[in-house]
Image 1 (cartoon, rainbow, N blue to C red):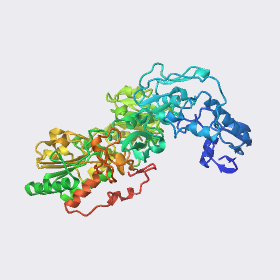
Image 2 (cartoon, rainbow, N blue to C red):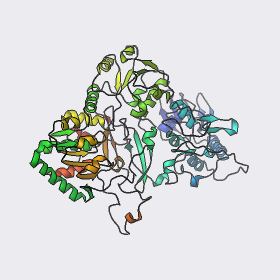
Image 3 (tube, rainbow, N blue to C red):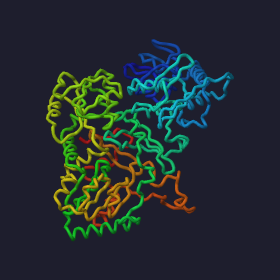
Image 4 (tube, rainbow, N blue to C red):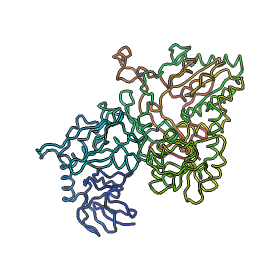
Length: 631
């Protein structure tokens, strides 16, 4: 490996490493705009100038374009390099509107940081500024072209990385324009990454527009709950309101980016229709009364029908802590059924996934990008896992062959990221053995896995996009605790009571149930029919654990306290002008805590830590790390 010196620091780095990255590895941050670790270098902004004092190359060079070589002596503080960077910043600021006070990028703007660092505090240019008209780019992304410094990050991501075709760069010389030919909503399912990528504020998030500065936000490492991939996120909240969600880097899962569903979907956290108060027979009540009455009615149910008449129901969107405590509650009560899935087919499909995935067959999203052959079997990744589709594109960019298998794999999904594909009728028609790293991505099914098992024999790895953020954990717990589907449990005719925790219960399955207790954060028909309803917290309002599609356990942290957002708060609900510990609408509790409190009222020991037994090792899992595969 080449040895070099950067600002008197001797270091040794792998061949091909750029000077900019080599400097970063020893804590020296060289200013840059166009360079991004996921997009590579472009040499467009010219602000990463350093001076090579000795070695095979000498003079002023761009650190993002120059690989390290043996014997290089690099200075980032040389007067010539500092002057070069200072002049470039001044040139970039000539046409900038200087609108930092009203720019949503303020506080997280690289141009702002580098301008101050370069000592550029006075505008010498007195001429007329170049101006542009902004475009409407949809309901999520705000466009402000006058702030652009032509770094090309947006276009390189949108077209090259994500395969979008409706946004690009137009013009020449000083009239370069980044946008669409005609204004309209951005079509790429990954367009929400533009605000994260843009270093100046040309693209900003409309959801949080004019709402807060970066330092005002409550933030914590979290996960996306909208599919099974477990993408790393940073939710940003203020005044008990979830304002926006940003991508968080996790090299094993989503890399640097996030799909638009994970970023902009209606999370229901701020919804005025969200239930926030315990209900007893349809009327609002206190937690103490709700839990006391529920415990009493469970006892009455047991007297009338026996413990076997009760079913405890978890779900694929309930955290590992909640699902595990549901299993312990069912065991303590000797309940007649423990369920994590509503339908028999869904339970069978999830069990088949757990059986097929092992440490040798499961792959991460990062490993998907390294495959040289990918078969999409009866799946539509636009709905089941958009970031998986983006990973497939990266594999294709590196030369992988992409096959669409069966009529259930629409070509529109690969067209949305500009992929070339081949259509084949069955998985057996693909010569998987001819490739070194073949991969099969399939919708999970409880039957018909023979072709997939044959593919594994041929050396293929497997990816199954699942239905919820914790489906894998629900399937594991189903196998370990001998759970059954709710439909099968109710078909026996012995179940007369349901304790459902964040489960999506079809209304038609609720007939004949004499005791229905529901804990959830979404309004539903089951909530209306319930005898006892208990509000639960959203994932951003608690700590928890999800296990993603590949069996990777990841922790997430609490971002905000539950409660009605201050914006739009009914004056009648405004807190009195006295100190208090609870906020209006702040009554929801984590599902695992509700289960533990109920179990304690029924005679169980007090619970302090929700993860125990075989899951105890996850207690100290780093929420900012890559997670831990449990297979």
